[in-house]
Image (cartoon, rainbow, N blue to C red; front, side, top):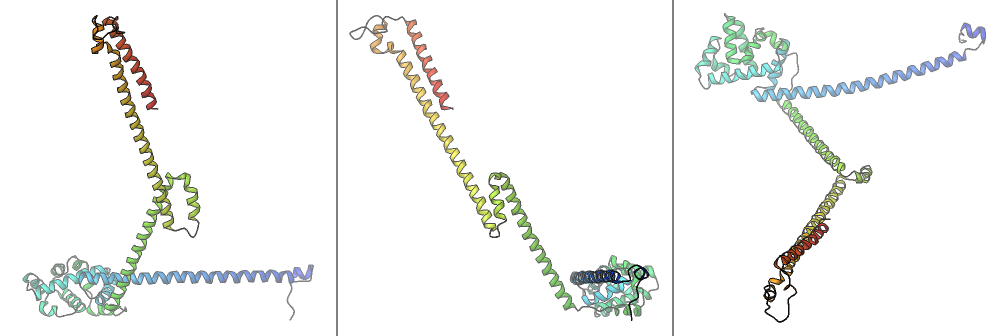
Length: 358
């Protein structure tokens, strides 16, 4: 059967191949879109599956930890938690309430505490028989007693004393019939206590692993920050280091070795500068000694007329033959000469000090 041509093609060209090419491109585009949509659907399914696994592990871990904390059966906690969820309460309220109820039952039946015996009796419950029941049966027996109580307010007060604040929160849930609650419990599949323990262990291991990975990553961040600070002090040499960081053979040990070498060079430079300063002070000290020596010598030279050999000339007669050079000078002139000599030595010493400090 011949392909039906469009009116335009039939009228102007008599050929429908251009339309067939367009149709082929449209079909190819639709195929690609379907393929992309399928890939996206697979990706979303994978993400959804991962989220479901995580949610399951988290919930099982929560059940396990609540069961351990309040010393209740994990399996009973799952079933009763579902009843609480449907009744407007939650799993944690069940764990707290059932945990307190178990404690009060033990204190009444085993420890013989009269206070709690009276509370059980007010609800028509024999504490001794109640203590023999498993956790789920204790819940149902308490529920029967609440529902059959003649005074609702007194029943609520007793429930709160035996189950804590959770007793008040769960009161309306427990007022439901035994049949209704059992039917709700049977709606769900539960994990055994052993399975809950294994999942809880898995979650704990995963949590520990995550924290360890985060800790190691934090150490790397701290190390990198230390490198950055050191790089700030060594900008002149940072180029070579940065280039080496892009080398796949460079390790953390190589980078640490680099900074250790920089530190060693700084310490050596500081020691060298300290030695130079000590040498400068030593020279200055020696020059100071030389200045004092010259000043003393100048004072002795200027007062030579007061030596035993010069005293005679000073007073007009000599202890030795010959005439002293200072014999003809007056006492005032000798003092002037002494002052001039000391002044000259001080000027000379000042020049030495200036050289020592430059």
